[in-house]
Length: 258
Image (cartoon, rainbow, N blue to C red; front, side):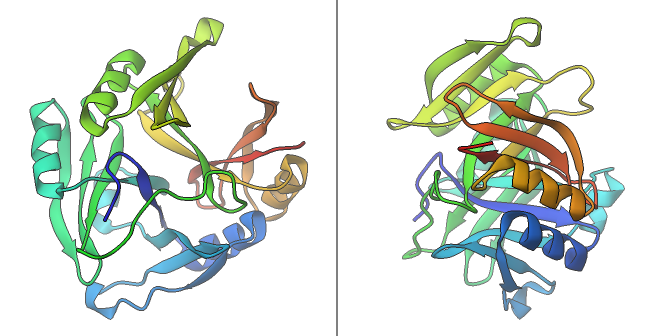
């Protein structure tokens, strides 16, 4: 099963799978292997950390390129029924970019957008499969989920209504507005804010856990990535950096120490 409201999978769509695999192996320390899904009709690589897979890697589809989509990371939110969830998202003002589709032997997914423009995926696994949340504190897993929204408050309300998220706390960022932290159960999972004006479109951003931020920054630069912001200490004492990989996909890292 997929626990409703949790991000249960992450995926990088890129223009050069081999180069992207080498970069994230170096920067994050992920292992990578072919997913072995010939029925899907395309190459798909699994990134793994610790006990199992964390994320997928695939070529940016031609239809996405035609829409102007650059290389990017996306997240999959678990729902009990993809078809019903897609209809609800549309009813709330969102969009469906790819209608609910079966992944042979895995489950069913759809590519959607919230009413304020940020794209994400929804996913329901086949019966008997366990797709719970990832390990939020373990190295190589996703430690934080952040939405640069078209409208921070309205987007926050949408996701809470849609997926059962709850407000944890608000953080005043001055001229940048309010950073609204959401929780699932008793655990904080991410934050939502109105996107800065210089950001071209609303988008989700995912923070990958690494042991130390400065060493990771060196690996990013050595691997051909570009630092966009940071290193920066955030409330709670963790350190973050935001960057683009060599193909241009935006990603972030978080670490307990500098």
